Image (cartoon, rainbow, N blue to C red; front, side):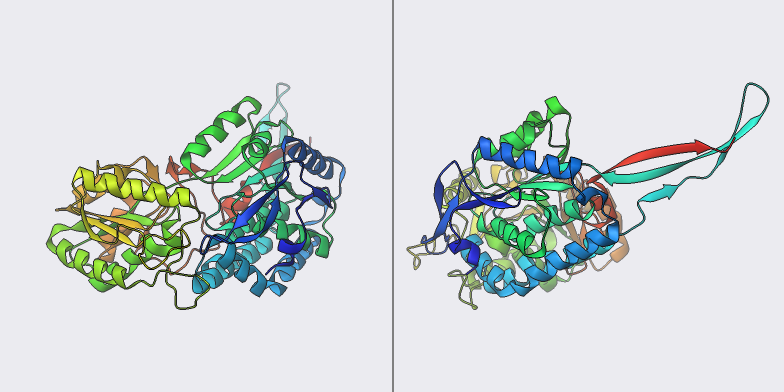
Length: 493
């Protein structure tokens, strides 16, 4: 396990390890309900100290003014230090977030590290864009020759608030682009998964980040609210539920700070009658069992043509029943636990509501009978679902997929777009051109065709619309979210 678990209950503020004034809290392994360690809880006062440190580091420190190549070298060292602790981080991800071994290694660790390396390299792009010179007539009959430059500069102090489902992934996705362009950061993780964030303090020490450039404050709502309301914080980047996102937007409004929201989803997977059924079923399973269904971009509404729906449901239910649910530390485990009992209770309530409304349960639907410890729930599949059912409208954030039938492409698009969310989407079809046309009609930030590229692209932006949030992550567009554009104009006479 990581050294940070045994380090003691300390926050990382202004380049120093300090006691949290909110006391400590036990961090639970969701697979067995045992205590991993005790994490510090910060208060509003600790958040205040972190904001002050970050503000000073940005306003008077060297970090924002370093040449891009020097920052790149420091961030490359930061990632190299993380890589040296790879196995420890994977073990922590299994214990803290309940991720199965294979998932922890590849999706929780390798994928975000790939994105992070690409981001650091991208951050050395020329921040200056020259616009074409213009000739402008003057009142005295002469003409001036002038031009303008657009310069991208770091936005300032970033408040980064992350969720528990992919803690290392999300922390890295916010910290790396912020620091790479010259911002300073206050990172607030979920109290369920604080160690994945606090380890960044050890990395910052190891590579010699200047004091105040990166600060980590674990804690509850009062810490988050201080970040979202303080005028010294220039930008808040948040990953979590749409309900909390709405509160953050309201809290940030009086100071008119920039906000990046990566929120929930109820994304649709459209399966056309000509689809490769085996591939579609395999994709369908992954999209409600990955991380026990705790993923905002998962495709949990399966909109399947009625001519093949019975086959799809039968095949998907059969493989869902074969998923090995259990201890994520066991390499044979296919799906681990939900994060806490409250998440499992919410899943049970939504499953019950689906049955009450007339959905047909075809797999799962209950706690595994052979696991008396841990927050486990069986992979669960419903058929005969209508798009107005609660189970089709609300994000479960548990291992539940629903199947909705349709008769033509227009109906499928209508069902998919009839949602409060707009994060992900997918189309399976042997007709790639038709699938592309349908992808363009989906009102959502991301769409995959026949399973997509196999992994998230480091160059392509990721984000959503509606209650799935706004703003982008990854690629040049995501990097630019942490900067502002300054126009510098001049003329030669």
